[in-house]
Length: 375
Image (cartoon, rainbow, N blue to C red):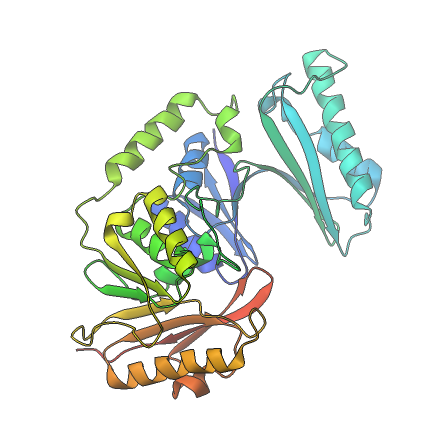
């Protein structure tokens, strides 16, 4: 069955998600702010959820139309073939949003959508009441300038929930953003990667998952696993293929350090849960103890403290002074840093080779990329 899928993404990561979808072999339809639309089939839902590292969710698109009245909304929703997706015992809930649309009452849109779905399914199955004890189908009706997009969430919990974060510290970076930071860098197998502000270890762990080619969704479940639309054998087959893809012999050199002993303990436990503790070295250390000077072309990828988060200006200034000094003494090294600090280039002592606006949670940040000199 040919399906239209939407991978949602944090603003600024659309190009990364687009590339991941292309690498999975699916045809792109369009890329917009916060989402990438593409074509696939039932197996594409499984593979997308297992393998997309930087997407937030994978949605199944059910319909798109214009509606300026509640009657138009009702009739268009009822016209969707819900019976092809939702069985008689399916549990279906409706969420919604409305921006610059005539139908601005979200609760009303949700109620009408649910009513239209119930009427359609009641006529098809010949039943009046639905027990809703089966698999979950979360429907979202999104209105933007009177254009309605109807989707069903295939992921359930957001894709950043890999399942390995058993211990957390204050203000952790999202796993999807950390994976994007690694993929936007020049890091590859055999090159030393250092995160001197590693916190609970998200950036080093995501790098290790990429280096070992471990599917990020391998150790978690998804809402669509219970759907009749997708045979259980497909989930089993794709998980088996994912396990076979793992490269246990990958030459990975990854180090994470932090001054917080509790953070390092959490990072070690998270890495163990992710199955990559044998290829990451965590240690309690100051930023000034970055890495051995004998390595001439390593890479630093880090999410240092922000002024908004901690408010210790002297400490933040010292961190950037350490970066500045280290980059000057080791010109072959590259620095990739995400921060809200506007004076980053001034503090490092040079203009960034590239900048990319990204969001870390609700904070607008910039991903500064300082490239080292090539050999």
